[in-house]
Amino acid sequence: MKKTLQNNTPVMALVCSVLGHHYNVTATITQHIHEYKCTCCGKEVTDTDKGFLTELTSKQREINKILYSYVQRRSNRITNKLSA
Image 1 (tube, rainbow, N blue to C red):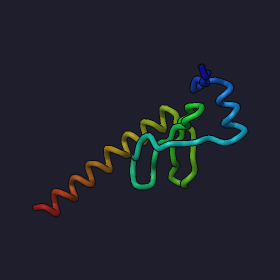
Image 2: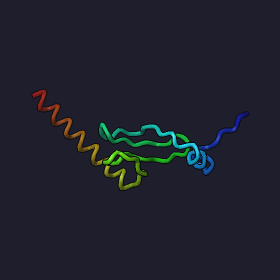
Image 3: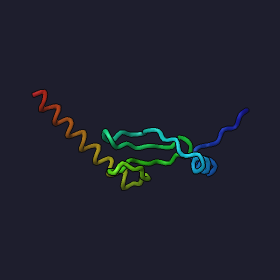
Image 4: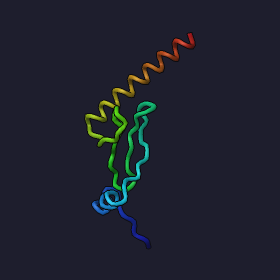
């Protein structure tokens, strides 16, 4: 039986530090801002306003949540104006 490594282990973090992270998009906030999670070590990052990746802290997560709700309200308002 083949053993597999569990995610979030120090070994997987070491593999990511040597080979680099393999990020998948977990949430789309706007067209240009996304949240990502590494499939190996579980590290979560997000895009900044300058286009760089930064660690996803609770403060950054709250900012993304507010930005997402603002974009949704704005797009709903524009859709309602166009259909009226």
